[in-house]
Length: 122
Ligand code: FES
Image (spheres, rainbow, N blue to C red):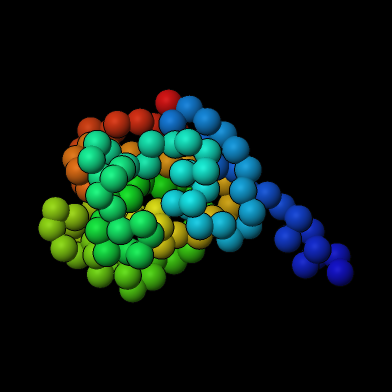
């Protein structure tokens, strides 16, 4: 028991748009943010998005902290403009939380811009 039990009982903390909340280890970041009422999408992207399939690219955020490696959907979608593979972004819908994380959303329909819309602290 010991280590495995202790690891599973840790609840990572997510800080985004001025809120800090706990989630299950390995939770899907998109679902966690939406459940907590965080404005994950910019403007009309809140209505026009792929609902987490990993194709629209509008859930892009910048993440500090421990999360899953970028999967092929995440990497592939961010190869396509207006995203850029050199930008420090991840698709929230394709990302699992494995430790405390801080999330920043940038401007632009896809969250591809350079100006923060909200930061971890608000
Ligand atoms: S919600 Fe469409 S790519 Fe994440």
